[in-house]
Amino acid sequence: MDTDTLAHAEPSPVLEKTHLRLGFVALSDAAPLMAAKVLEFGHRHGLTLELCRQPSWAAVRDKLLSGELDAAHALYGLVYGVQLGIGGPQADMAVLMVLNRNGQAITLSTPLARALDMTGGDLKAALAKLGRTPVFAQTFPTGTHAMWLYYWLAAQGVHPLKDIESVVIPPPRMVDALARQTLDGFCAGEPWHALAEASGAGETVAATSEIWPGHPEKVLACRRDFVSRYPATARALIRTMLEACRWVDTPSHREEIAPWLAEADALDVPRELIVPRLVGREGGRRFGKPPLPVAFFEGGAVNYPRISDGRWFIAQYRRWGLLKGEPTTAEQDAAVAAAINQTALYREAAALADVPIPEETRTDVLCDGMTWR
Image 1 (cartoon, rainbow, N blue to C red):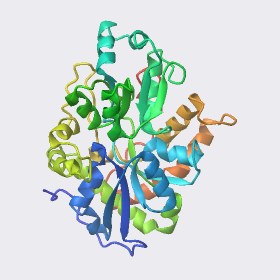
Image 2: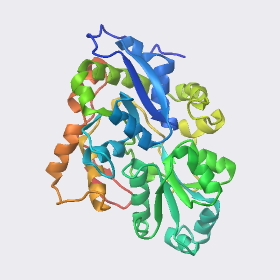
Image 3: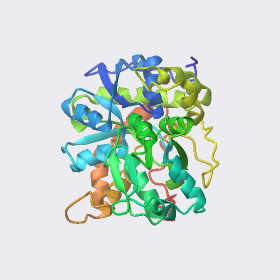
Image 4: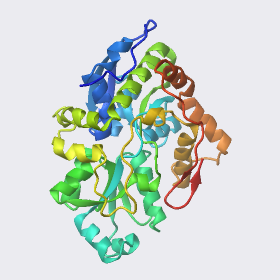
């Protein structure tokens, strides 16, 4: 594997901790962690990485909180849900960097996809043809997939808390549930949509980049006391993962890392089902617009943990009644996000890695025409 394009490491400061256990869930967008381990990018910065596959996002949360994991590939919204104490234990959390943007999707069961065709793309009418309450799965109550699913449904006139039943299922189990017709659809990452289509269990009808182009997705997460106890280690870990994200962002490198992702102790899915959507060959016969491919680096534009991204999740929790108590102002939400998103530490690590910092704010238009900045 070619690593010549990566920056040479400078002498590292003394690290407080050198062996790190990193958690991940079986998803294609764990590719940066896999690359960091296979190519031992951590060695440049005095780190030894141990990858620890977890069966669910709840397991990732629990092991971060117990200290069994030092850091993890995690749903952006998982971190914020724990910080806010929604549906589980509360703890002070940290987002070290964004690992990827885009790359998720929504798949419907084959019968429901056919009904959608018959109604000319009218989702509400297609769901009515089921004659019962539709069942949709997402991967964690406050996670990105839940928020993308809810936003997508609401934009089409379907209330995600009243018109459907929403259940939590770990990504690797979703295709079986769809095939057994206990699910009508799901939102998750790849390669599970590719597997659903290959098995005939369902059809992918929407990419999350249609919902929010360039949306934040997985982050490098840890407890906040990890940062305070091991600041040099946390900085070295960000540098390591920036190099891994830069390497994985090259399409040929994505094909190179796919065999490692396909291994039994990683995704345990055939390589040929991983590669097409990982490199951006998704077809698109049903998509309103061509889906944006999963992005891991894009010159550093992907990785900066913007405060506004965190604020969006807080706003969605309030919208769907997950966040109780008195309403808060945008300034108060920004203060919560600023405590979670380690922007100063990221800037230090990015400067050492020669990675530019993008603009602090950006303006995005979501699928329902709403503007977020």
